[in-house]
Amino acid sequence: MALVPGVVWQAGPVGRALGAGLAAGVFFAAFVLIESASWVAAAAVVVVLTPLHGIRTARRLGRAWPGAGELAPDDRAAVVRATRHGDPVGDARLAPAVLGYAEGLRRVCAEDQLRRWVVAAVGVLSLALAVSDTLTGSAGEAIASWLLLVLCVLDLVWYPRRRALLMERVARAETAARATPSPGPGAGPLDGPRPT
Image 1 (cartoon, helix red, strand yellow):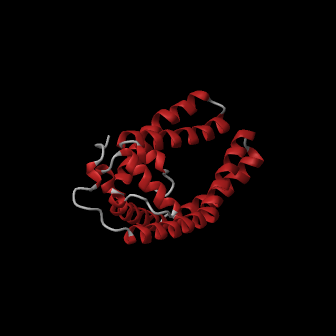
Image 2 (cartoon, one colour):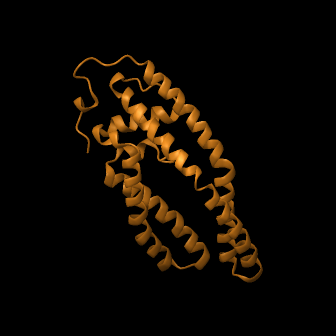
Image 3 (spheres, rainbow, N blue to C red):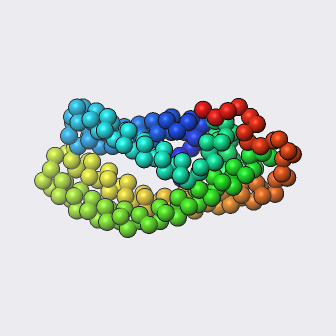
Protein backbone atom coordinates (compact mmCIF):
# COMPACT_ATOMS: atom_id res chain seq x y z
CA MET A 1 0.00 0.00 0.00
CA ALA A 2 2.89 2.32 0.73
CA LEU A 3 4.07 2.01 -2.88
CA VAL A 4 0.66 2.26 -4.58
CA PRO A 5 0.20 5.73 -6.12
CA GLY A 6 -3.06 7.62 -6.50
CA VAL A 7 -3.45 6.75 -10.16
CA VAL A 8 -3.75 3.05 -9.26
CA TRP A 9 -6.33 3.85 -6.59
CA GLN A 10 -8.35 5.67 -9.23
CA ALA A 11 -9.15 2.31 -10.77
CA GLY A 12 -11.61 -0.11 -9.24
CA PRO A 13 -10.55 -3.35 -7.51
CA VAL A 14 -10.01 -5.16 -10.82
CA GLY A 15 -7.93 -2.30 -12.20
CA ARG A 16 -5.87 -2.17 -9.02
CA ALA A 17 -5.27 -5.92 -9.22
CA LEU A 18 -4.27 -5.68 -12.87
CA GLY A 19 -1.98 -2.68 -12.31
CA ALA A 20 -0.16 -4.15 -9.31
CA GLY A 21 -0.05 -7.67 -10.75
CA LEU A 22 1.23 -6.64 -14.16
CA ALA A 23 3.94 -4.43 -12.62
CA ALA A 24 5.19 -7.34 -10.49
CA GLY A 25 4.87 -9.82 -13.34
CA VAL A 26 6.90 -7.71 -15.77
CA PHE A 27 9.49 -6.86 -13.09
CA PHE A 28 10.20 -10.46 -12.18
CA ALA A 29 9.95 -11.60 -15.79
CA ALA A 30 12.84 -9.23 -16.54
CA PHE A 31 14.93 -11.10 -13.95
CA VAL A 32 14.05 -14.42 -15.54
CA LEU A 33 14.90 -13.05 -18.98
CA ILE A 34 18.28 -11.74 -17.78
CA GLU A 35 19.11 -15.00 -16.04
CA SER A 36 17.85 -17.54 -18.56
CA ALA A 37 17.59 -15.53 -21.81
CA SER A 38 14.29 -17.35 -22.35
CA TRP A 39 11.34 -15.33 -23.58
CA VAL A 40 9.08 -18.31 -22.95
CA ALA A 41 10.07 -18.49 -19.27
CA ALA A 42 9.66 -14.72 -18.91
CA ALA A 43 6.19 -14.88 -20.49
CA ALA A 44 5.25 -17.72 -18.14
CA VAL A 45 6.26 -15.59 -15.16
CA VAL A 46 4.05 -12.73 -16.38
CA VAL A 47 1.10 -15.06 -17.00
CA VAL A 48 1.37 -16.78 -13.60
CA LEU A 49 2.52 -13.94 -11.35
CA THR A 50 0.23 -11.18 -12.67
CA PRO A 51 -3.05 -12.68 -11.42
CA LEU A 52 -1.54 -14.16 -8.24
CA HIS A 53 0.15 -10.98 -7.09
CA GLY A 54 -2.62 -8.75 -8.43
CA ILE A 55 -5.42 -10.50 -6.56
CA ARG A 56 -3.39 -10.64 -3.34
CA THR A 57 -2.52 -6.94 -3.59
CA ALA A 58 -6.07 -5.85 -4.41
CA ARG A 59 -7.43 -7.82 -1.45
CA ARG A 60 -4.79 -6.40 0.88
CA LEU A 61 -5.54 -2.85 -0.30
CA GLY A 62 -9.27 -3.42 0.19
CA ARG A 63 -8.75 -4.66 3.74
CA ALA A 64 -6.37 -1.81 4.58
CA TRP A 65 -8.74 0.93 3.36
CA PRO A 66 -12.30 -0.43 3.29
CA GLY A 67 -13.75 3.07 2.82
CA ALA A 68 -12.19 3.32 -0.65
CA GLY A 69 -15.19 1.59 -2.19
CA GLU A 70 -17.50 4.38 -1.01
CA LEU A 71 -15.64 7.03 -3.00
CA ALA A 72 -15.77 7.97 -6.65
CA PRO A 73 -12.55 7.13 -8.55
CA ASP A 74 -11.36 10.73 -8.77
CA ASP A 75 -12.06 11.25 -5.07
CA ARG A 76 -10.04 8.13 -4.16
CA ALA A 77 -7.11 9.39 -6.21
CA ALA A 78 -7.38 12.88 -4.66
CA VAL A 79 -7.39 11.44 -1.14
CA VAL A 80 -4.35 9.27 -1.84
CA ARG A 81 -2.40 12.07 -3.51
CA ALA A 82 -3.15 14.60 -0.77
CA THR A 83 -2.33 12.15 2.02
CA ARG A 84 0.90 10.90 0.43
CA HIS A 85 2.09 14.48 -0.21
CA GLY A 86 1.02 15.74 3.23
CA ASP A 87 -1.33 18.32 1.73
CA PRO A 88 -4.85 19.35 2.75
CA VAL A 89 -7.35 17.46 0.61
CA GLY A 90 -9.16 20.68 -0.29
CA ASP A 91 -12.65 19.15 -0.08
CA ALA A 92 -14.23 18.98 3.36
CA ARG A 93 -16.32 15.92 2.50
CA LEU A 94 -13.11 13.96 1.78
CA ALA A 95 -11.44 14.74 5.12
CA PRO A 96 -12.79 11.54 6.78
CA ALA A 97 -11.46 9.53 3.83
CA VAL A 98 -8.00 11.03 4.39
CA LEU A 99 -8.12 9.81 7.98
CA GLY A 100 -9.25 6.34 6.87
CA TYR A 101 -6.56 6.03 4.21
CA ALA A 102 -3.89 7.32 6.64
CA GLU A 103 -4.93 4.76 9.25
CA GLY A 104 -4.72 1.93 6.70
CA LEU A 105 -1.36 3.14 5.44
CA ARG A 106 0.02 3.35 8.97
CA ARG A 107 -1.21 -0.17 9.76
CA VAL A 108 0.29 -1.64 6.58
CA CYS A 109 3.64 0.07 7.19
CA ALA A 110 3.71 -1.31 10.74
CA GLU A 111 3.00 -4.81 9.41
CA ASP A 112 5.78 -4.42 6.84
CA GLN A 113 8.26 -3.90 9.68
CA LEU A 114 7.86 -7.59 10.50
CA ARG A 115 9.26 -8.64 7.14
CA ARG A 116 12.60 -6.90 7.68
CA TRP A 117 14.16 -10.16 8.94
CA VAL A 118 12.96 -11.98 5.85
CA VAL A 119 14.54 -9.38 3.56
CA ALA A 120 17.77 -9.51 5.57
CA ALA A 121 17.87 -13.32 5.27
CA VAL A 122 17.18 -13.14 1.53
CA GLY A 123 19.96 -10.54 1.26
CA VAL A 124 22.49 -12.83 2.93
CA LEU A 125 21.45 -15.75 0.71
CA SER A 126 21.54 -13.57 -2.40
CA LEU A 127 25.08 -12.45 -1.55
CA ALA A 128 26.19 -16.08 -1.32
CA LEU A 129 24.35 -16.86 -4.56
CA ALA A 130 25.82 -13.83 -6.33
CA VAL A 131 29.36 -14.84 -5.39
CA SER A 132 28.73 -18.43 -6.45
CA ASP A 133 27.14 -17.39 -9.76
CA THR A 134 29.99 -14.99 -10.46
CA LEU A 135 32.53 -17.78 -9.99
CA THR A 136 30.69 -20.70 -11.57
CA GLY A 137 27.53 -19.51 -13.31
CA SER A 138 26.68 -17.77 -16.53
CA ALA A 139 26.87 -14.01 -16.97
CA GLY A 140 23.07 -13.76 -16.86
CA GLU A 141 22.88 -15.70 -13.61
CA ALA A 142 25.55 -13.49 -12.03
CA ILE A 143 23.81 -10.28 -13.15
CA ALA A 144 20.43 -11.45 -11.85
CA SER A 145 21.95 -12.49 -8.52
CA TRP A 146 23.75 -9.18 -8.01
CA LEU A 147 20.59 -7.26 -8.96
CA LEU A 148 18.65 -9.22 -6.36
CA LEU A 149 21.28 -8.32 -3.76
CA VAL A 150 21.05 -4.64 -4.72
CA LEU A 151 17.26 -4.77 -4.33
CA CYS A 152 17.58 -6.32 -0.88
CA VAL A 153 20.06 -3.65 0.20
CA LEU A 154 17.77 -0.90 -1.14
CA ASP A 155 14.85 -2.42 0.72
CA LEU A 156 16.84 -2.48 3.95
CA VAL A 157 18.50 0.94 3.62
CA TRP A 158 16.52 3.24 1.29
CA TYR A 159 12.94 2.07 1.83
CA PRO A 160 12.80 2.70 5.63
CA ARG A 161 13.82 6.32 5.04
CA ARG A 162 11.20 6.71 2.32
CA ARG A 163 8.59 5.15 4.58
CA ALA A 164 9.52 7.51 7.44
CA LEU A 165 9.20 10.51 5.10
CA LEU A 166 5.85 9.18 3.89
CA MET A 167 4.61 8.81 7.47
CA GLU A 168 5.63 12.42 8.22
CA ARG A 169 3.57 13.57 5.25
CA VAL A 170 0.67 11.37 6.31
CA ALA A 171 0.73 12.96 9.77
CA ARG A 172 0.57 16.44 8.18
CA ALA A 173 -2.38 15.38 6.02
CA GLU A 174 -4.17 13.92 9.05
CA THR A 175 -3.66 17.16 10.99
CA ALA A 176 -5.09 19.15 8.08
CA ALA A 177 -8.03 16.74 7.73
CA ARG A 178 -8.86 17.00 11.44
CA ALA A 179 -8.76 20.80 11.19
CA THR A 180 -11.12 20.81 8.21
CA PRO A 181 -14.60 21.99 9.17
CA SER A 182 -17.24 19.28 8.82
CA PRO A 183 -19.28 19.52 5.61
CA GLY A 184 -22.93 20.42 5.83
CA PRO A 185 -25.65 17.76 5.83
CA GLY A 186 -25.99 15.83 2.60
CA ALA A 187 -22.41 16.50 1.53
CA GLY A 188 -20.96 13.06 2.19
CA PRO A 189 -18.58 11.20 -0.12
CA LEU A 190 -21.45 9.27 -1.71
CA ASP A 191 -23.07 12.40 -3.11
CA GLY A 192 -20.63 12.52 -6.00
CA PRO A 193 -20.49 10.13 -8.96
CA ARG A 194 -20.89 6.49 -8.03
CA PRO A 195 -17.64 4.49 -7.76
CA THR A 196 -16.64 2.08 -10.47
